[in-house]
Image (tube, rainbow, N blue to C red; front, top):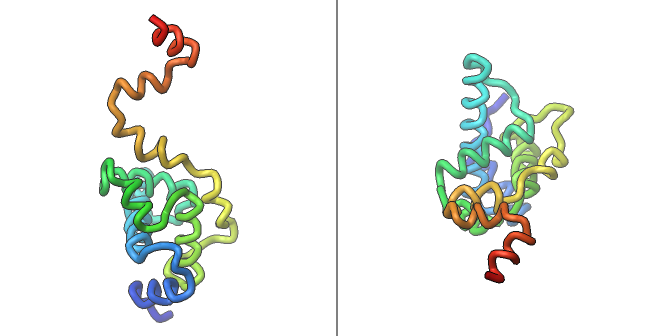
Amino acid sequence: MQEINFDEAVDSILAKDKRFARDAYTFVREALDFTQKSVGKETRGTIRHVSGQELLDGIRKFALEQFGPMVVTVFEEWGVNNCRDFGEIVFNMVEIGLLAKTDKDTRDDFQTGYDFTAAFRKPFWPAGKLKSETKPVASREATEGN
């Protein structure tokens, strides 16, 4: 089987689907490598296929590591606004032969991911804001009234 050139494959994808920036495809490829290595540590170095949910978790960890508090801004620049968008990127890569899938893998695997605010913004919020997020509404009203 002839190896597919990543840049040429992404050019082909972008010719048909302009929703996401080239960098989003590069990031997903790197996040997949990161995820497989992380899973490999758990399975004593064996690289194996990862599920959509495992990839989403790896994407979250890798993005926080790479971009810190700027992650949402970077993703928005790339046209990525939710986990479903990552599924679209992955399946664009599958359809062109850059990635492989099993019979069990579907775009739906990316439908029930995480909320971007909770995953990418909250880790950088000041402690005071996090505490106010967890207070019941009645408590807030009582303290604001004093």
